[in-house]
Amino acid sequence: MKCFAVRRAAPAAAALVLLTVAGPVACTSSAGLPEPEPPAPRGEAARACRSLHAALPERIEEQPRRPLSEETEYAAVWGAPSITLRCGVDRPAKLDPADRTYDPSAEAVVVNDVAWLAEERPDGYRFTTTERTVWVEVTVADELAPEISVLVDLAAPVAAHIPLDPLWESYYGTEESPSPETASDADTDADVEDAEHTEHTERAEPAEEAAGPGHEHGSGG
Image (cartoon, rainbow, N blue to C red; front, side, top):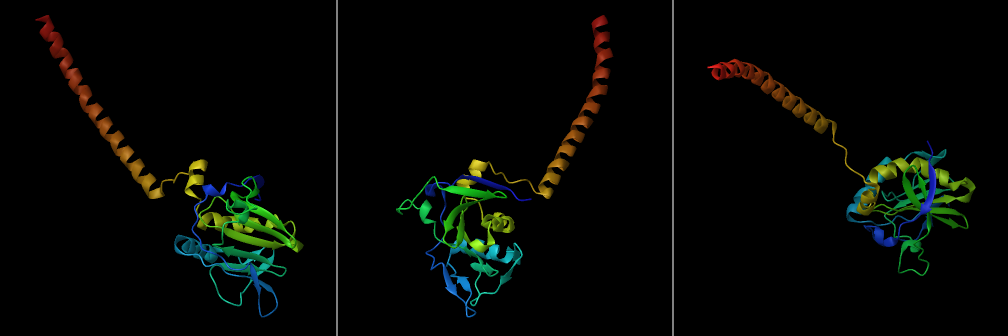
């Protein structure tokens, strides 16, 4: 199911940055098709990006994924005209307080619970994740309009492999659900406790009955 919404992007101060300086947005393959220039994330950002890369779909909006001239786990491309993805890019200028184009009220789109900053360009749109610990950038050619539809196929892998910023986890009230094993253990403990309580009650009842006549006999004497 497709789910679109629009809201204000978070101020830059609310984001946890785990990235390095990225290179130019695109280069050209030997076949003359544009290709994204891979970023160079490090640490936790690099691990998250590699995990995302392994989960990316083979097709987006019927556009097949195509190989890059240089193999990388930090960029991907589909179709021609192109859909490109880069993981571990810089913070968008609109969300950078040090940049003259900074706009803390910039609009974001939310597609299947993943928020993106949306920026129109002469040749299409650029979308960049917000509310997450790593910036993931997706560009979509205007020939593929409505460009936002591309984000539907990317929402699930991004949500699964690019963690929410801790501040947004608190905002959404995200809590880790107990595993089936943990829930099963808790149920077993509760059953044992109930059984022990029942056994204790059954033992106590005869004792009270035995105490009753003795008490009456004593009082009658």
